[in-house]
Length: 304
Image (cartoon, rainbow, N blue to C red; front, side):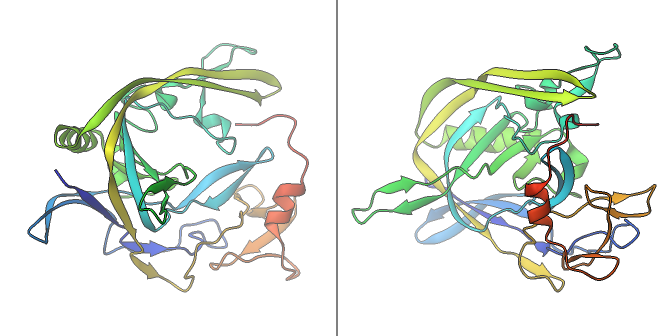
């Protein structure tokens, strides 16, 4: 059965969402992101189902041992669902803050933390939920063949955080309620030829220093892969850009410190942040935060 998918990003705000006091700025949405799966019959686009979903937004990201705000975009344009993975495993990137992958045990150091395997999966509560469809960019060769490009890490996947799907953002992925994701991907596999690749084998290790002690996350097994013989076309629409900032802000922005009552750079300097992402010192000097984030010495250990 022929399928294609459209992801409408809805109302999109690129502006920095916090004011000079660290409080959220109003960024109203009248059109939420949604996913529609279609089939085609006699040249007609026939929608089969439509579900609310998420797009990227401002998220915490660790850079050289310090946590910044960073806009995580959901790239627009064409992509393919080339495989569906049941019980997927999330491999956290280096930019993931330690508190997202390690949790307290109630014991004393050096066993005060342990890996949060519910978050990495496989688990109904993992970052990818019960099932995920992997997006991949592609290009068409002159002979009509498709060449897969680099995996950008974008997925359509399930989530156990049900309330957040209708209210908040993701790190760029398109999240669905777990039961909806399971229903959708089961329907696709029931009507689309595929190959059972089987259980993934992964070699993943990440060592993290927390409060001066080393903790290790090791993963050696991924999810169960179904490879689609004919990938499903996906089009991510731009949506309606709201506000004055028309493109994503690509540089990191320091976080607001409640004790200092100001936005603080890693060296302790107080700065002001405008809605368009400009970071300036109290004297009005423009600050290149990308240069600062890349040049600062990594913290000797990551604090929670």
